[in-house]
Length: 168
Image 1 (cartoon, rainbow, N blue to C red):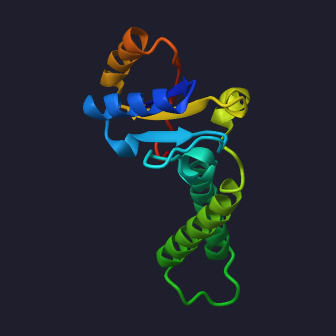
Image 2: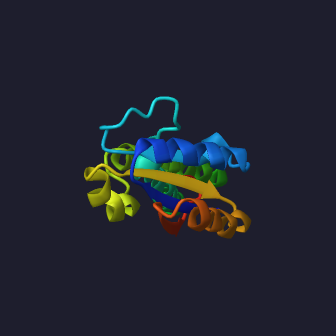
């Protein structure tokens, strides 16, 4: 998937573009609108916590680091058992790894939800000035077709592109 970042000058341009994208087959769940709250964007797909924060990124890293920490902790208990170890070592490693992954994901998700999405820093000034950001998640095959649509019918739109994170 690729994410196109489209900066639009005003609400009428945004509404027209969203209608055209949906008519061309882009599903509503692939569209995410972000603005400075000065526009009436009712009825448009608003950006959620997944797009506005580092929640997804925090979940990924927390899951990975928590699982690693749990595995290391479980391995230490198996290697240096406190007294008599009555649990099966494989079961213990599975429990500590899974528990570490769960705790790591929860903690990192809580922290990530409080951190703004750093990929959006590039657009901060324009959004503060009243422009509207439309994020469009597209399969790679549709990216060039959508860029061409922008060039041909919407020269007022500034188009940027970054690879979307897997879970965002």
